[in-house]
Image (cartoon, rainbow, N blue to C red; front, top):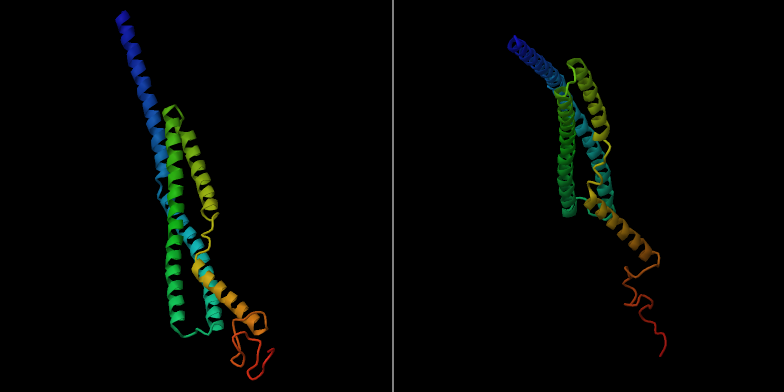
Amino acid sequence: MGGGGGDKAQKQAAADDAKRQADIDASIAGINHIYDSPDRQKQYDQLTADTTKYYTDDVNRQEAIEARKQKFALARSGLVGGSEQAYQGKMLGQDYDKALIAATRKGNEAGANLRSSDESTRQNLIGMAEAGLDAGTAANQATRSLQGNLLSSEAGSTADSLGGLFGDLSAGYQQSQDAKDARNGALYGYGSLFQSPMYGAGGNQSPGYSYGP
């Protein structure tokens, strides 16, 4: 009779283990169902697109500013229509293309970071499910985690700046400004960059006159 009682206890223990495992499996399945939702994939794609657009708009803004600077610098230097304008235009185009790639990379990083955050919280919840977290609570926590991850990723995706993307052209513009200031200073007597052909090398004597012995 004792053997029969032990067999019954073993069967009960096995049944309890099976139920516990079934509950764990149900919790994990519920978690994965939420994280693998097609709607979440759309959110990855949307965050990627929105972030790319944000930084692309910044690229276009900077490009417009640099194009104006380039135009005025070339006009001030009398280089409109020449090879220098063609060169500067080529450089601007190359910088613009690189900047667009950087904007796209930012968008892809935003989507990837959100996906990574989801995977981290998914694994945490699966661990909790294996420790006994019930399916209902697991599902609620999974939903809240997805919402929190999305809000955090949306805020973080546009927190940084691409920085100055057209530094070389800006430097060229600054050089043209410096050159203009130098010319103005010389014209108004503050330098010797421009000398009148009427005067000698020193710029202070008139031909035909002698000063001193």
